[in-house]
Length: 401
Image (cartoon, rainbow, N blue to C red):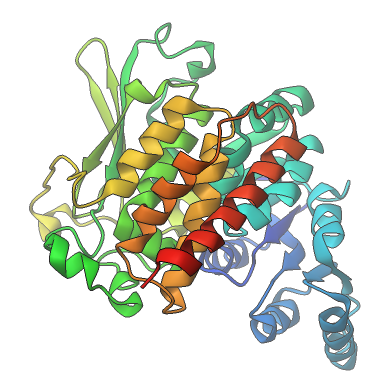
């Protein structure tokens, strides 16, 4: 039984509805029409898919990048008899994220582009399902201060952070030492290049990097997984979500992607959350928390898996993970610099303008070139992001091959 709300369905905004997380969210929502209704959907590039989603889920609002796209979508939806109001741009994203009639916001816009609207949802005191790890990586202190100030409910969607959340004691916000937590163990599949040589990795193509062995994800996140930058960003995110110093967060390579993360306690207990590699599990958990609802995910068959393996990450093969840990330790604007440089590097790789091995080289060069600053305001964070992108583009023009 999934009686989340016995009065009326809770309105849900999906930021990034056309991405893999957004589509999985809509799948879960459609399974529980008595508990949830789609309030707003947003999309950036796959606007034909967004139109189909609007026709299926009939949201009150839809948001697209610009007014030209908004005009086209308005006409199409009006012709189909829908009264959906179409907004555009950053202002439209923030409007549907903070709307007083919206109860839950799925923050699934990839990269720095999702920061402002995710913060708007937090500042409006919503239940925020955080799939946009970059927002927290870039503005960790500001973000968590806004959560505390507004009373927003912040629930992690990344399978690893959701697993940690499920394995933590309910009062973990009092401090990890006080509640007896020794370490957070963040699992990583190792991606498609886990067993490749350095020479093979250097020659990797975008198609190979996007061929993840376990998960179905967007291209940018797939490349981040192949470089293990995704795990590095998750390390930074875990530090903010659970108020953990970087030294208390360890990465463990677990190729089967069955154990999604673990929490190690001082009494010797280690709690783990297990499940099939399907993002609908953490989405359903966060939507209904503290209750449980059906996600559509098949039960885990331990007999079919038969074996669980673990190994330490190879930092020579995956230097992005070491760069991310250094950024976590440095703090300030350094994580924002790291994230921006990585976004530029991944885009260049996917476009064929640079090689896979250029990704960590570019990031390291940007971090060496630009100074650390305090991240005391959103303006400082966004300026660091801008400077890092300029430095990254300049590096590409000079060194990429």
